[in-house]
Picture (cartoon, rainbow, N blue to C red):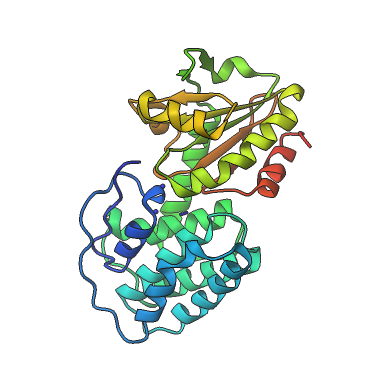
Length: 299
């Protein structure tokens, strides 16, 4: 979730979140500053090391480690580092399916860290942990709340973003030169996927998307995978991996902006009537995609 792309979002007021930027290039939106040095305590250093290595773990090991890290971070003293570590873990924890109970522990840790020492101000950097927690609540269906107007504002913004996506329409050209218009695909189930060649979670979910496309395309299923990169970079990448679903180009990021895409991968599922019925804020597994498609009546 992971903080969704060519540069990352500098969270300077939350120094620990710089770790997130270094580890989650595909989860941040347009950042590019060098990481600032953070003074980690002896209790924080092993947590930092484990966060750096979290993506390299097998999924079953990663699930248990995620829960363990959530509890370790929760036990730290209140402060900016604690919020930053909780934010970094949260962003890593949505890259797939590591268990709802584990994700609940992550959300509880982030909420507690904010509650113990609320960030001061209204800047984008200060709002980052509130935005993250709101995304967990709205899109990952965890239980968390804060008696803070900034959290309420973050929840309201997500609702407004979803209303915008519900009414979004666009026309883009794919790498083969064919034009696609979202609104013209009524009667089909459409999965709009935002991705990039440099994004590890994007690359990880592509084989599952290809598998599902092959399984359901004859039943009116369309994937529109949108990249803001140049065709000269996208074409060989797609050819090498044997991807057959449509790959659309959005070099000016107009459609990315229309969908309020700040980090990738992100996916949106529209049913045959054009209603937005499911979405993900990060990488999904095959089973998670199947659950999203089921909400559009495709199973």
